[in-house]
Amino acid sequence: MSFDLTILGVNAATPAFGRFPTSQVLHVHNHHFLLDCGEGTQMRMADFDIPRHKIQQIFISHLHGDHVFGLPGLLFSYDLNGRQTPLDIFSPAGLEPMIAAQLKPGGYLSYPIRFHVVDTQSPNLVFENDSVSVHSIPLKHGIPTVGYVFREKPRLLNIRSEQIAAHRLTIPQIKAAKAGEDVLLENGQLLRNEELTLPPAPLRSYAFLTDTMADDAVLPHIQGVSMLYHDTTFCDDFAENAALTMHSTARQAAELARKAGVGQLICGHYSSRYRELDRFLVEAGEVFDRVMLGVEGSIYHC
Ligand SMILES: [Zn+2]
Ligand SMILES: [Zn+2]
Image (cartoon, rainbow, N blue to C red; front, side, top):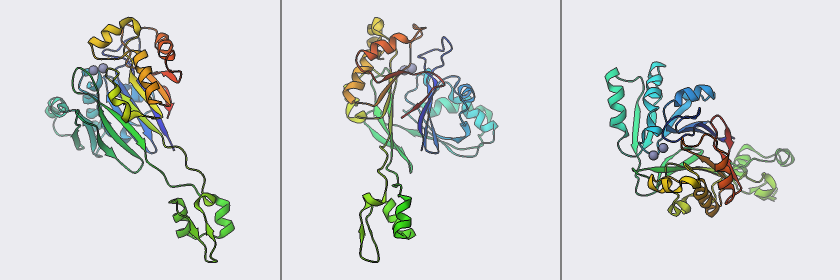
């Protein structure tokens, strides 16, 4: 079962050095979730073979242009392709009138868009389906901003095939074992669930935190996540700019990742001041060694 991230855009503010503004696709089981939609998102989807028609939910962190200016183009393309599946868009308040102003003059769309306003003051469950839950977390940035945490839900256990044959298990007994129950055979023998099933795979999780100052207030919400993507707009040389513009340095993000005990930290939202990115890895790596650069087109397995 997949739980993979593809980064489509990783630059801050403006496109530069071949890097695009923020967007990513998280692929969880059969679902594709779009996170932010900077300018050029649909071109990047084509570049990296993302099945854009499969996206049914879009999660927007905030309304700065480098996170939303790809939406009108994408939403218009869906209409031209005759999309009928509803699209849910989650974001802080204010997105709907922005989008309506650009799409309404073209007439009605072939599919419904459902806008969901996300509370930017307190953490909330904003979406869930059979395989994943998504919580929002308030972030510290110049305008109302939220991060999103995706957590895989427990799956049914895998049953050991040799046990089915050995005990001639019936379908109801197999179902019970997959749900974690012990099984009582007709002859009175009790089979403990651990004998019948394989140990469950660890549950995976992903936190998307950008744009933001590094803020300890998020720690309870991201503790132990498998993968964290965090704003690393600057390196140490522009730490003052990071504070002024309410962004983070690579070192600050790494300190947060260390305190939260995350599995992996991915750097991103790089300032156009930096053509080369090695330095982000070096400075973050001095604090937390499980760190990777966010690179467009790369796939990260949670
Ligand atoms: Zn930004
Ligand atoms: Zn921003």
